[in-house]
Image 1 (spheres, rainbow over the protein chains, first blue to last red):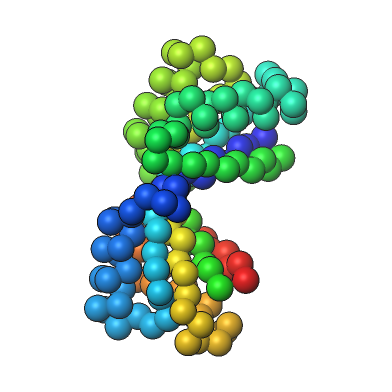
Image 2: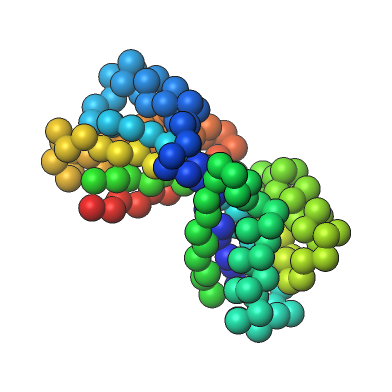
Length: 81
Length: 81
């Protein structure tokens, strides 16, 4: 089973890295992009030692306590069998 | 309309950053994680000047030509209305 944790800047936080990417794309002639925000994601391969509910709780705990900086970032996660 | 481009290391490429995260999680006592791979993603807000097919083609071109290093990375993307 795999879990995917997506971490992005909160909407209220400026994302200069994304802004730079957006400007570069526009400058290079790519069309149609109004805004870019950049985030990171973690693909967690789970070893199967936890059942589904426990794994979900553990992944949420890791995401909240370690993978995300709660001051400026937010996260969501998905599971895949 | 939004497009999400996900960029990750090819499976054949070592991901020391992900490995470090995995070791740290295990050391901190989190259970059940066999492996971690880290990637990045781009949330592109599209300005609506292109129709759906053109936007899809443009996003694929940006992802392939700019957002991804084809030597070591691969990408996939999704759309959301």
